[in-house]
Amino acid sequence: MSREKISACITAGDEEHNIRRCLESLRWADEIVVVDSFSKDRTVEICREYTSRIYQHEWLGYIGQKNLIKDLSAGPWILFVDADEEVSPQLRDEILDEFESGRNTDFDGYEFPRMVFYMGKWIRHGEWYPDLKMRLFRKDRGTCAGSEPHDRTTVPGEVRRLKGHLYHYTYDNLRDQIKTLNDFSTITARTMFKTGKKFSWSDLFFRPPIRFFKAFFLKRGFMDGMLGWVIAVISAYGVFLKYAKLYELYRCPPNPKGNA
Image (cartoon, rainbow, N blue to C red):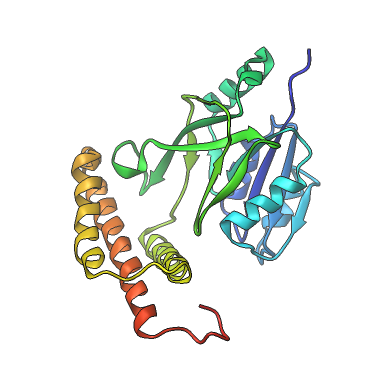
């Protein structure tokens, strides 16, 4: 009996420094589908070495882009992988074993830990690990939703947990991390504002230190040494930015005819 086919789906945009590593880790998939948001670098050129299933579409957001690529795929199973991620050999082998043995017929999805490579080191504690992601799922059962910029896929049936890692090369350097944090906090604040989330001084004052305490102490970020400290401090700063920007939106509401 032949196994059910898996479509590896990658959303990308100006990722020439990451995309080849991602594609190499997916050669085993039955098809690779890429949706590119009109990259200005060599992203599409590199993708053409691995697949002909390349589509270009304006950026619809993290949730919208994944729903788009899900609909474009042909296989009954979807594997979401971002351009700055890599499927480890162990995770690849576990997935193939599940499907070749037929055990996958008992489940609607699979989740696995994501491990971040940060400043030359794999982070194994704190809020970043284990960052469990449900990324492999039945196309006709999975729903991609969440709140921008954090997409989340859910299925109604049982989800099995695998041990192999999805590697995440999340930031090039601290400057890149701060830029991403700034972008994400803006998106999150705008989403909260649009959905009617009220600003509270207690959120601005207490949530950042609580986030630090959770990341560094409760989640044992201290076991990653100085990097654990850096991650916890910047995470707390990100929480501060999010609520400070929500305060700004209430103080200076955007033009209703423009973008919120």
